Structure formats: C-alpha cells, structure tokens
Amino acid sequence: MKFDDLDKKMRVYETAADLCVLPGMFMVARIDGRSFTRLTKNACQFEAPFDVRFRDLMVATTKSLMNCGFKVIYAYTESDEISLLFDPDERVFGRKLRKYNSTLAGEASAQFSVRLGQAASFDCRISQLPNIELVVDYFRWRNEDASRNALNSWCYWTLRKDGFSEQQATKKLLGKSVSQKNELLFQYGINFNDIPSWQRRGVGLYWGNYAKTSINPMTNTKTVARRKRIQTNYELPMKSDYGIFVESIISQSRTAGAT
Image (cartoon, rainbow, N blue to C red; front, side):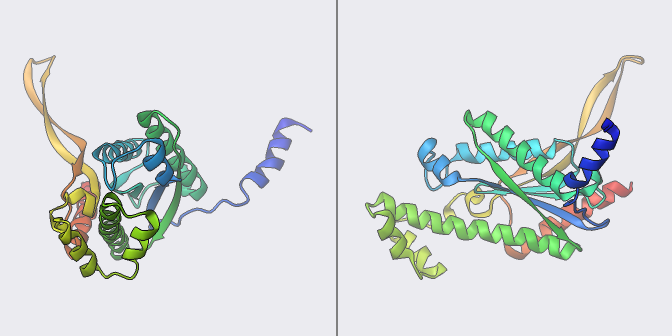
C-alpha cells in the first residue's frame, strides 16, 4: 500500500473523536495540577496553607500560557488551577478541543516543571460558553471557590499547627458555617479579611498598553510606540464587583479588536 493511501486510511481513526467549538462561542480552559497535594506538601514542602513561592510559580506558568500562541483575553489563577479566556475569534487548530486540551496541559506541565526543578503535570478541560453573562459567571464561580478554599485551608492548617491531627482537624471543621470558621480563626487571633488578597481572591492577568519611547535611526528623532504587556493583579475585587471587572476586560478587548 502506498504511503498516501495508508496515511488516509489511518487518519480516520486518529480524528474520529475530533470535536470543534462552534464559531462565536467563548472558550474557557481550566488547567488543574495533578496530585499537587503530594507535590506541594511532601515533595517540595511549601509553607501551608499558602506559599508565595508557589503563587509565583503559578503566575509565571500562567504568563507562559498567555504567550504560547493563543489569543488569551484574561487569565485567572488560584491554588493549583489556571483559567484562560480566549478571544471568541480564536481559530488556532481549527478550534479542535483535543488540540487545545493536549497543548495547554503539556505547556503548563513543561513550564511549571522547569521552574520547579522536578516533574509536575496538569490536565485541561474546555468550557464552551455562548454569551458574556456565562463567561462572567464562570470567573465569579472560580473567584468564590478561591475564597471558600482559602477559608477552609486557613482553618485546617491553623488547627494542625496547634497540634490537631489530620482526622481531628477535619472532624472539627465538619459542618461548620462560614461565620463559624471565621470565628474559629478569630480565636487564634486571625482576621480572615486581613489575609493577603491573593490568597482569598486569586490572581488576575490581562493585557495592558504602555508607551515605549525609542529613537528613529533614520531621522534621529524620538518616537513613541504603543506596546502590550501582561498586567498582574493581586488585589482582585469580589462577588458582583469582580463580575463587573471581568466584563470590562472583555469589553475592552472587543473594542481594541474593532479598531
């Protein structure tokens, strides 16, 4: 059998499961660390419940994903996860889901591993959202998840550092409300609202414009050019204010694309 015939025959099996995102749909990729509890607490011994070194690894990995060939409007990271919002006109890979999932998981795994100095892996899934309202709801969901996780983590590790075992700390927190967990921390002299914002709300990354001054070698005159670079926000708003913030970034990207 000739190679072209063999290639055509086998490609059918390779692409049989291909699914493509419909035009006009917003795509949001969620990239999650795999077995990161073991990695961060045992193998690397990061400080619990939060470690600025781990935060910076996640932010650096997120920046690399924003610069790896996709049109990313907004990125958000909390704990060991990253969410990426793509331009609705993104056409890379023909919008094939398997290509996005494999490429983004591989890129995140490679970038994080290189910076960490040991192997780490991520998985990826794509949410297909038909309108801006659902995009905003998605990021509000992850923002609320960050707050919930931060409160639980601070309570759990505060008890552990006070001598409670894993089982005792887990049992003590079982069924407690948000206000009760806040009260528990207050008994240890910790006000949850005073905990650094990036721990309670996550970190947002988006493109911002800046002016770059240079000298025109032909005329020897000063020129100013507009350039884009990633801005990192460690002080994100919460709840409805965060929704307004995300919607404004989407609107700005659409305005920029239309000009």
